[in-house]
Amino acid sequence: MTELKSKILDILKEDARREPALIATMLGKEEAEIQQAIAEMEREKVIVKYVPVLNWNKSDDEKVTALIEVQITPERGRGFDAIAERIYLYPEVKTVYLMSGSYDLQVEIEGRTLREIADFVSTKLSTIESVLSTKTHFILKKYKQDGIILEDHQDDHRMLISP
Amino acid sequence: MTEPTPSSMQRYLTDTVREIPPSGIRKFFDLVSASKDIISLGVGEPDFITPWHVREASIYGLEQGKTTYTPNSGLPELREEIAAYMHKSFHVRYEPSNEVMVTIGGSEAIDLALRALISPGDEVLVPEPSYISYSPIATLSGGKAVGIETFAKDQFKLQADQLKQHITPRSKVLILCYPSNPTGGTMTYDDWLPIAKLVEENDLIVISDEIYAELTYSSKHVSFASMPGMRDRTILVSGFSKSFAMTGWRLGYACGHADLISAMLKIHQYTVMCAPVMGQIAAIEALRNGMDEKDRMVESYNQRRRLVVKGFREIGLDCHEPQGAFYAFPSIQSTGLSSEEFAQRLLQEGRVAVVPGHAFGNGGEGFVRCSYATSVAHLNEALDRIGNFVNKFVKTPI
Image (cartoon, rainbow over all chains, first blue to last red; front, side, top):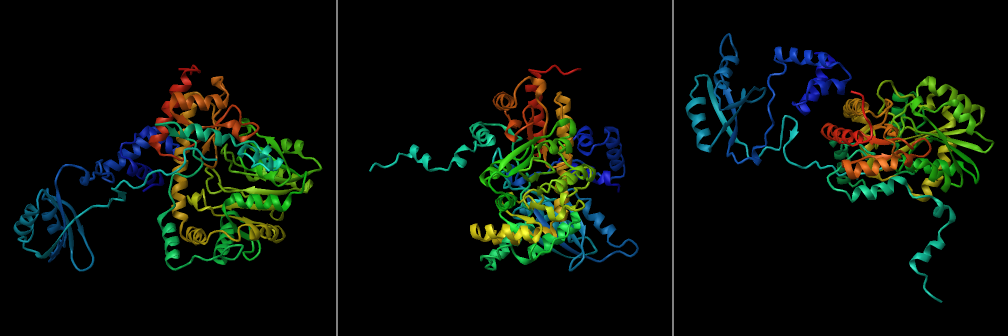
């Protein structure tokens, strides 16, 4: 990736709504050049989507989130990917990572109730043939996500005027 | 015998202290503090907080019971880190044992240097617009501050002919602050050459306040001490406030010839003993492991610098391109207002705080200092508000 593209991504990671014209000013470039770089990254799926970062603690929506450690037997020829795909295609599954260490896949799943998640694990996940075991951990509170601290704690403490 | 009334207590003050005018910034501070819902571009400090690893190192030091005095000149490990950093980043070599001292902010270092160097009546040359403390400290040291005006047309660089005009047989010290607060002006190697020549010819000592050295954008900072023959004539002052977002720690340092540093150390040991140990521990961590974080902060300032300069120019305010620090210094002459009127009315009518240029001495009138160390969202909103305010006075060409 070029230095320009990585700078654009840094700026968008702070606020994905920033317009190419503003980014161009901030980087001292032409707007067209920024538009082109962004278009390329969108085409190449470097930039996959622009979505808001939500703090569900603050919304009225009741949600339950769990992290599940899954041990699996990899498939001959396709390794872990085929089984990961069978899991990630479920819409309630939010993230799936292949892990090093004592288990293979980390699955984040979201449901409305504890029962919904229990049902998913017992009827959908555990019943997949290659799944050897699952360990479910419920998330009690999210403090930080994707480098963004969710709690309001960093107020500007500076004096309004200083020399 | 009657009790003296509070107001009459002033008669006990020295003439020197009584005659120092109150800071123009202080006056404006009171006005701004009383206002609501404003965006302040008047803040002379980073909008980042000290990186966590630096804060954590200091907390760990406290947990380990590191709460004692340190050597007068600072922890040896810190002086070694400072010397190594000075050499690596700015190509000046200092001996950590006797040419580097840790101070309470760069401000203390400037005070010590002037007190060590100035005898009654000596003249202290100060390029202006300048940081507000130099002239008062020169006066408090018994010297006479002599302002040297610098101009927007020269990007506020110090011009040799201007300096030359102000040199007299009593000139002793030249104070330099580049990158400059408040103008954002910088000096290159070629800009320094004729200045260094005059310093040599006139046997001046230079106090070079390079606190904004890391915040230099288009080219690398050139330390005055790195100029040929200038190392021993220069007391290089810097600190952690601006480059590592550590203003509240009050930690700075001075580097220079051992004879000068030991004289400053004499005053330092009798007045403050040493800089606080917790800040010194944090500073070691900043120099050892803080460079990546510092680079990220500098890149962020640079992006915002481009944004405000373009913004001011679009509004129709002349703005030279600042190459350092985190200030823009646009001219507000096209509005027909004085800088004080402009700042006051902008505060009241536009809800944006800026600092009137006249607070920074000669050459500051007609300009305002705008710090861009604030979020992009705030800068955009502030520029909109300033634009609306300025439109009352200026017809911008469409």
